Length: 74
Image (spheres, rainbow, N blue to C red):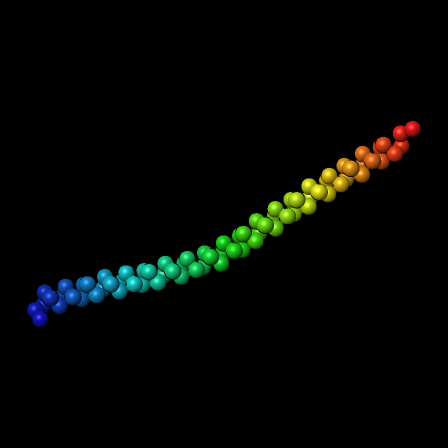
């Protein structure tokens, strides 16, 4: 092999190695974000449920207060 062919072959292998390592790093990053997204989804669901519970508590409080007012009327 001539010197130019060796350099070209080395260059092609270097590009392939960089491409493969970039792909592996990308997959690792995606896997890490999947775990983060599960935590974020869980936090969102908990927030929704706590807002729903607060709304129900307010409505129950209003109902109890309105009922007390009506009970005192002659």
